Image (cartoon, rainbow, N blue to C red; front, side):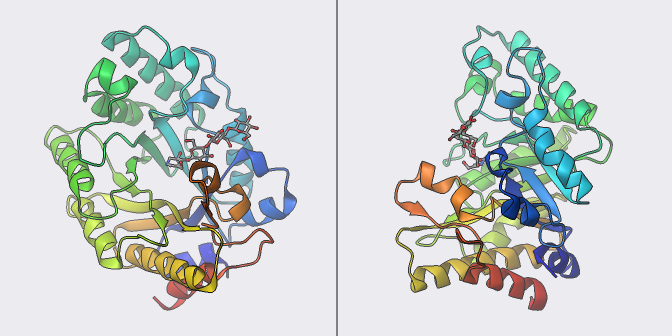
Length: 321
Ligand code: G3I
C-alpha cells in the first residue's frame, strides 16, 4: 500500500499532495501524483487561485484548475480546493481597482459564486479564507481588510456556504498556527465569534510549513488542534513540508524524517483530524528554494524520485501509529 492506502487503514480520510501545473508534462511525476494508493487526495498548488480563475473581471477561466481536478477525478482521489480568498496571487484588475466596501464585496461574492458553482460537488473541502492573520494575532492588512474591514472574513464564509454544494467543508487555512500562540488563539477567537453569530465554518487547516532547525513538537501540534476541535471543528494538516539548509546531510535528513513522522502522528492521534496533505512530494517542484535562498529538499521524494527517510517514517507512523 502507498501512503493514501495506509492513511485510510490508520483511520484518516486521506493522505494527499499538492500538485502544480508546471510539472504535469512529467509522466514519472504524474504517475505518482495521480495514483490514489499513494495519494488519495490532491490540492492544486496554484490552479484554483484567483489570478488564474478570474484573470479579467467577470471572465472565468478554469483551465489550470481542471488540469488538476480532472485527472484526480479519473483517479478516484478526493480534492481539497484552494482557495477562494487570499491576499496573494490576485489579478492586477483587482489589486489596482478603485473599490468601495460595497463594490469589493460584490466582486468577492461574484468570484466565489462562479468558482463554487463550477466546482460544484468536486471538493471535499474549500479553503475559504487563507492567511488572514499576522503572527501577533492582528488582522493582516491587505485589500480585503483595508477596503471592507474584518467582516470580509465572515462574508466570504457566508458566500461559500451559499454557493458550494451541500456538505462541502469550509475551512480557514493558515501557517504558524501549529502551536498555541497569539495567531492560533486569534483564529480560535474568530471561530468562537462565528459560532455565537451562526457564521458557517467547519474546519481549520494547519499549513505546517516546517524547518529542520525549528519545528513544533508533537504535543504542540496536538494542543493547537485542540483549540479548534474543542469547538467541534475538524482539522487537517494542509501543506506539510520540512525544509532544511542545503547542502543536505544524514543528520538533517534524519531530523526531517522525525518531524514528518511526529506531524503525521499528531493528526492520526487527533480524532477530528481528517488528513494530511504534503505541499508537493517531489523536491524539484517544491516552492521552497524560490522563496528561501539556500534552503530546500523539503519533500518526501528526492530529485531522482527515490523515497527519502521521511517517506519511510511517515509510512511507518501510518502503519504502526
Ligand atoms: O505562472 C508562472 C508561469 O507562467 C511561469 O512559467 C513560472 C516560471 O517560474 O512561474 C509561474 O508562476 C509561479 C507560480 O507559483 C506557478 O508555479 C510564481 O512565480 C510563483 O510565485 C508561484 O508560487 C506559489 C506561491 O504559493 C505563491 O505565493 C507556489 O507555487 C505555491 O506552492 C505557493 O503555495 C502557498 C499556498 O497557496 C498558501 N500557503 C503557502 C504556500 C507556499 O508559499
